[in-house]
Image (cartoon, rainbow, N blue to C red; front, side, top):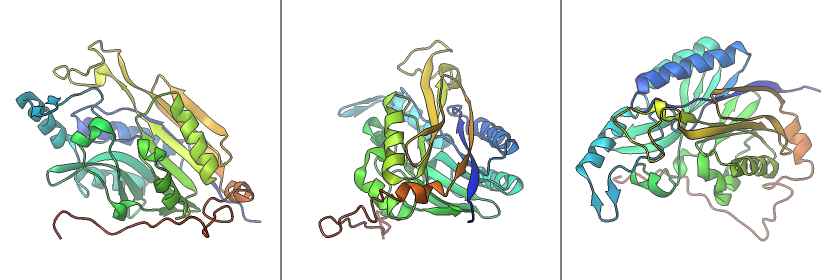
Length: 308
């Protein structure tokens, strides 16, 4: 019998808000550290390149926007990345040099609209797919556009099939079902949700989809935010804005590594992809456990540009 094992890593680091070049340096160091531990796949948090502006209001009130908030958004827009662009070129070179696959959270600048994305990079090939977050949550809708069904990819990475759900997309049952149907074996979940309930969600996704779950959360403190920007949480440098909680989970919902909280760091684990078949023996929600005579799901995967 052929065994399919893979060494994987989840990186828990935070952005340097409005300093994308500095954040990219952190990413490179972190991926090198994961590779030195043998990882062939590294998953990094949501909105890492470009930043997650936790606690910023952008001068918004219902029915009004302030000049100061518009300037704050301009800075955020300038911190986003182009795909392809300088940052993706650097990541391609890194993935190729180290022979690793990367899943990286970023803020993509497309014209004047920003998208929260998961970038899939492969050695030699660079960016092989982009997933745009389908539904920004709450105030995120003020700063990010919505993805469409054309950016819901799966990517082959050696013996594994990768897919991604960003933060609260993991709470969208129909999205999960559509991705399960594409054969995901490693479910990548870049996030900034650091609540205790997130672990329960990740265990549920692993158990429901009978897939490995690699969830990467940022760890962000006030010290990572410029002094002239004032998040709602406070101004003490040690104030934690995003507390982490990254984790690696098996297809039977068992925690393999983590959760890591309260600090930056790496989780590294060997996973046996043969566990997918073992787990789906008694539950395959898009296979023998489905009831297509009763339920059906239609997915529109056409691009939806504003102007055709």
